Image (cartoon, rainbow, N blue to C red; front, side, top):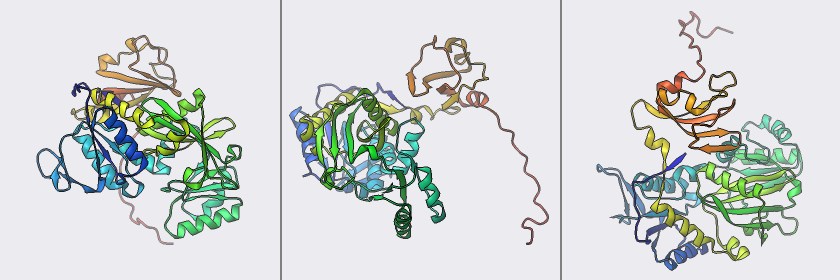
Length: 408
């Protein structure tokens, strides 16, 4: 949950931007740098691994190449998979210093772990291929049955560019592959194979609250992976509202304002496979002939003047106050009442957003009538919010039995 901060006023139209990247000569880095310079901004490409986080003084700071880092208005993280932990620590420090970033450290971390990303998206009714995660060899066959049976797709949790994605045509082959990967301490996901996608997927480039470009990637020959790095060809595509909404919602749920969202074309609509926090630009710019890098820079430029902040972090620093979600149960007194008649404000509670199914109503009006199943994201006194949640009877702690561990 984010809100707009008025604490920073950005004037003059020129910002100082740092692109965090270990690959200054890569196409994406060069295009982002060129787009920023073309718009009159100051921009530097900084090697993420050359930062040092200084927490010794009263005001935490960052050093770069052994010197104190100069002030920046915004950063654009291009954090590689191999340096996720250190890279996100650097991004997090920039956030603590109130430097704007379109992709937060938390968002990058969430999206980088395929299992965590799937868990988060599944809670928000995002369509995805059926997925299972197991550790014990004896649970593998049941997991395969749960996702629809063979063939299945086996994915390494931290694979990129199609590496670590295997199609297993039979159950026994899948079991053998998973057993081998587990023996090398690799964690894997088991996913249903979406046969109707026919080796194709869609990459949507989300910037802010819209898709700025989209392409279809098509696998070549017998290859089922459509990644460009696997030899797949690309073509521009016009997304239907359902696909655009799925892409934008997925990126926002993950906490990313710049993201590449990969989707399969399922028989019932879009199926989100992955949300990438550092999407490559070469394939999609050449396929669509659109200035995607420029759209990213323009978005950051606008946000520097009117940035978003982490509302939970800012609002939970007051003693006794915090942010919590209240579920309107079917037997609750709130059902059928308008917010202004709910007595919530009298209890020192402010409703920030109302979630109803897949819809989100930000800053709901007082005339909004609550329904069973609504979820109210509220800020206010924690004790008041606790009193509105179902109570669970606490069991008293009993005395230890004379024989804590019975024999036999």
